[in-house]
Image (cartoon, rainbow, N blue to C red):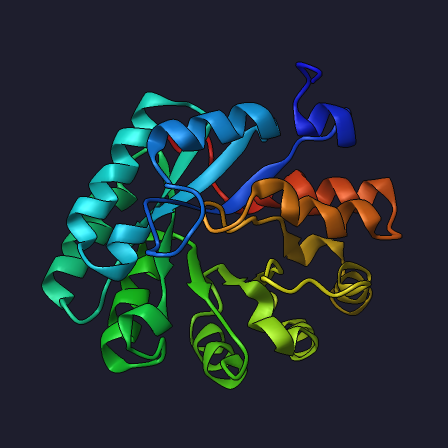
Length: 257
């Protein structure tokens, strides 16, 4: 096997930034999600930057999961953190946001309404999103089929805050594109377990190339899995560069430290 990375072989000369990755296990078969595994996978993929949140923080223990991310990002310059918060514990969530918003290697926040069993437009979540807006810390939020009206409502409430709708509402990605057209503070990451042909072209046609970012959802998926639709898409090289890396560079402050 060639010593070249996947990016070297498939996308020579392009920078790839993965805005949607995880450290830790999910309780399902597949990758173990350890820091060592993330490093090995990134060695093979050749992604220049990977934004990581913790599966432990999303599912069970927020402070310890965020601490796992901190250890990773401080040890390897390719990784950047997303601070997870759980509004069921508002004092803890506020303290976690305050702590990691000041950390030079944390570039966004993460919320997973389904795992946390609390709608993103709940009063407790809205109070914490107001804090994110004050800190100018973009919010990445898990979105899925049926979530469109709720996440759109929240994005309208905070027009100065950048939102990343992870999974682009899944089967409702066409609705995601239409909703986001009226919400300039929203960008879409479109990775899901079922990728449709022509999804990338559709989203670019409806929303424009500046509003899409690249995410893999590793450690649940192999990162190269998410590259397939981008490689296959009948789009310009300029648009491919924006989607794979330039948009993330513009929207996330990788130089905040």
